[in-house]
Amino acid sequence: MEIGDYIVHIVDDEEPVRKSLAFLLTVAGFTVRLHDSATAFAATAPSIKNGCLVTDLRMPDMSGVELLQKLRNLPTRIPSIVITGHGDVPMAVEAMKAGALDFIEKPFEDEVLIDAIKRAAEELSKDNAEQDVSAIRARLGLLSDREREVLSGVVAGLPNKTIAYDLDISPRTVEVHRANVMAKMEARSLPELVRMALAAHFDLK
Image 1 (cartoon, one colour):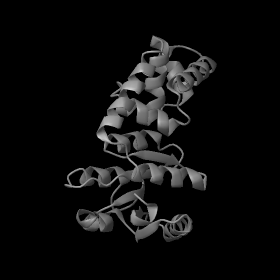
Image 2: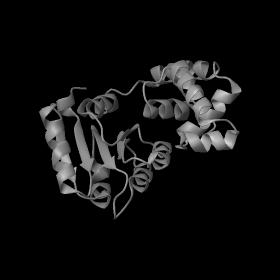
Image 3: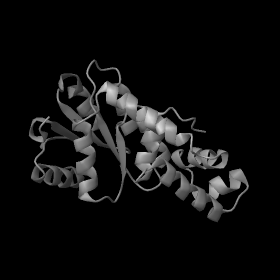
């Protein structure tokens, strides 16, 4: 699908943020629609076709997670990307469990968001998705028991110090295991690692 035919719906309660994202994505060639609240978007969501959602997590009327949970009841799927502030990773993981395709931590490079939206527009077919999950599970099989424990903590949004305390090891050792997990899983970022874990139904603790 050409990106010009794919409408990106931006949901954020802060007008400067909406306008900034709209300018960025319009210049990149996307068709954009703005919504000043999750409630406003939810009202129009049933009629949306060929579109994806970019939403903030923390909003006064309805959180991004609550919005995604509402969208799950729609007959048509709207690929969703959530934008999160530092410290919101556990909430972002919940959003992915609710159906988000990706989450992006602030501040982010323009290309990170653009690439995420392009992935939403070019979702894998069912067969490709199944192959992808098989590859992820094969990589999970390469992890040691300790690395799996560290992975569980990382994708749950726990800081290294907390993981170290829970496992009775040093923070430095956690960093080493975390780097090994990223390498073995071939993950380029935390959001990508979380996507893999959720896709493979990894046991998050």
